[in-house]
Image 1: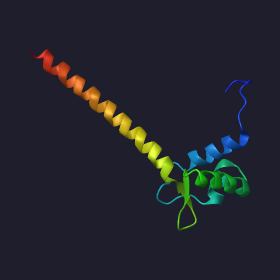
Image 2 (image 1 turned 30 degrees about the vertical axis):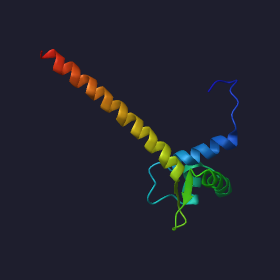
Image 3 (image 1 turned 180 degrees about the vertical axis):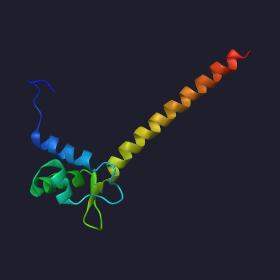
Image 4 (image 1 turned 180 degrees about the horizontal axis):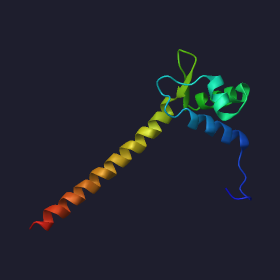
Amino acid sequence: MTDKTRVSDSAMRVLRVMKALKGHSLQGLANNELARALNESPANINRCLNTLIEAGLAVRLDTGRFAPGMQLLQIAQAHANEMATAQNRINEINQRVLAGSHA
């Protein structure tokens, strides 16, 4: 980030909370765990979580803990699908190259 770049501190806080949820899809994280990990107040974390929940990017589990939401998981799955399709195409080309080298 350059000195001239202007960003929203509150948006950055929300994004840090979203990133912190990575790897916690099943068990989730508690508000106080997020607050400690991100050195933020529980009130700030709560506002961030409410924003993420409203956007479908986080969800409150039955346990009261928070996890990545369906929209976030769909973004991740779409990326994984795109990469798998690209890898399949690369593999197909490599197979053709190898088959041609034996002719």
